[in-house]
Image (cartoon, rainbow, N blue to C red; front, side):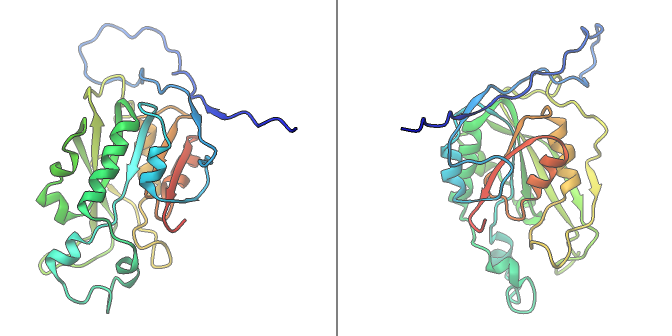
Amino acid sequence: MPSKPSPLILTPPPAPSTAPPARTTSVFSGDRTVEARPFELPEALVPNTRLQMDGVAFLSLLPGDCIPVAFFDPQYRGVLDKLGYGNEGKTRGQRRSALRQMTEGTIRTFLSGLDRVLIPSGHVFLWVDKFHLCQGVRDWLEGTKLEIVDLVTWDKGTFGMGYRTRRRAEYCLVLQKRPRRAKGVWKIHTLADVVREPAAGKRGHPHAKPVDLQGELMAAVSHEGDVVIDPAAGSFSVLDAAISRARTFLGCDLEG
């Protein structure tokens, strides 16, 4: 009988060796000292591919405390339903309205799963719009070890909806799993908190996110070869960002 193939073990590379740092009181450091542990990859999860599956099921296949960085872009109808523009899905935003929507309970389930699989001091980059930014999303984090530690504004350079000001930005909340710390974890200190990067355009996914910005964020909190996950990948922009930054991508979307 043919032998069963050996399981794929994802082994993150060791942290780059550096000389002992000079004695300093600065909170900044260009070195990342935390590392993710090796783990056995289930057969259903293929690295660097566009997997079509449920994101909660995807997260359940991963062992705990093994992933250094994740991205999450929940598909919600909060701003559409609660602000009630009335023409969404008719004269504008037809592709966005057609996407399957997540309830707030589903979003909390995703974040709970992300909390479980992250290493201590690991990061989730959570995309939100202005409505949810103003209303607050702390309820989504209840029961997890995730804390909000920073915010990055993405200036898309295009006008969107708005009764008063027209929306041209989206927001990336930086969440960190306890223990919360930056020194020895976040190694790039030149990233501004407002970043201008053109949106994908009309032919792309209606919620496509900026590849270069996401690449810079993952580079700040991971090593080359580390695993980056996205359980609701949409346009799979995180896949493109991971490949460009020599990271290993694991992710899925219901639409594939």
